[in-house]
Length: 242
Image 1 (tube, rainbow, N blue to C red):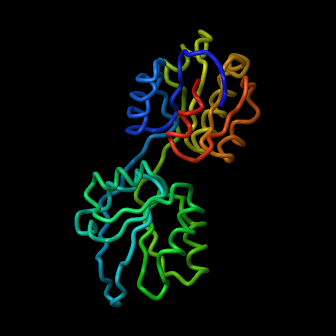
Image 2 (cartoon, helix red, strand yellow):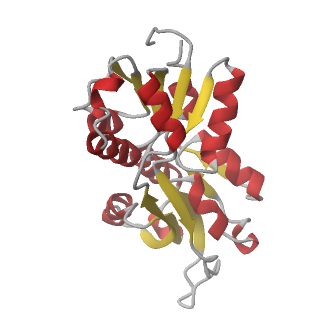
Image 3 (cartoon, rainbow, N blue to C red):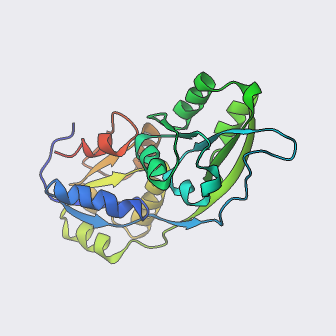
């Protein structure tokens, strides 16, 4: 666990998840500053039927992010859903899915879970993910003989400038920790911090990364230290706070 002082915590994940994280950070006694590095644009509900014209039954839904859930309508709630982690699994249950299983990890863990729980001959799988995401998972499963229908559930747009609240906190030197929930948001922050010449002001701040890939994306800025969560989930990331 990283040690350090309590203070101001920068939260870089997109809304609406950022607000939930901010509430938890505040309950821990810190001052949260929400600065989403991405904006989520949800696509229209998917027109996916449990049984295709070819007669292949839909036997499972794969979700690599809770951001994909809004496009999955009630007609799909009886189909078993496999979520990348516990937070996404909880959101799926709250959305109305009746059978939800968490991989408790990343996309690689989700692929292993499918290989353990599902036989390729049983039917087809729906993978709902963000634009430009999920291809590696789909390719791995197809190599294993699975029939995968991949659909774009949402798009992400990178933030073009750091929000004023984040700029004030960085320039005031009050930030003690910055939370990064993905390599993508870490890359956006890295680019904006470089562009706005904020690097030297981060020397007193710890960067907390949800995964090793995220940690790699944060290198190059003069953080006090970069810490990686023991598991790729919010609970493990917040456990790094002192």
